[in-house]
Length: 87
Image 1 (cartoon, rainbow, N blue to C red):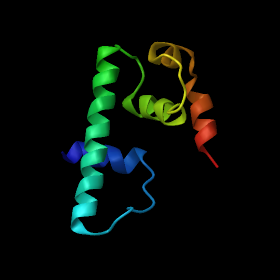
Image 2 (cartoon, helix red, strand yellow):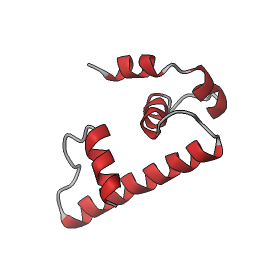
Image 3 (cartoon, helix red, strand yellow):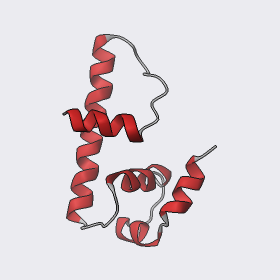
């Protein structure tokens, strides 16, 4: 669990919680854990040679894209993804 929160702190830019009640924070942390686990499963099943952070970044910019996942990960250059996310 500690590794997960260390990874979150290093890689995700959380500016604020949407809700600040105890229940809201628990739900948001649960969603983050579930999302991380699903991405790790996809990464493992597809035998991707990218880091979990790269996979998350690629998925975050292509949520509404209808490209197959294999094509998405094969064709996406991580440097392009970082450029899109920087203001």
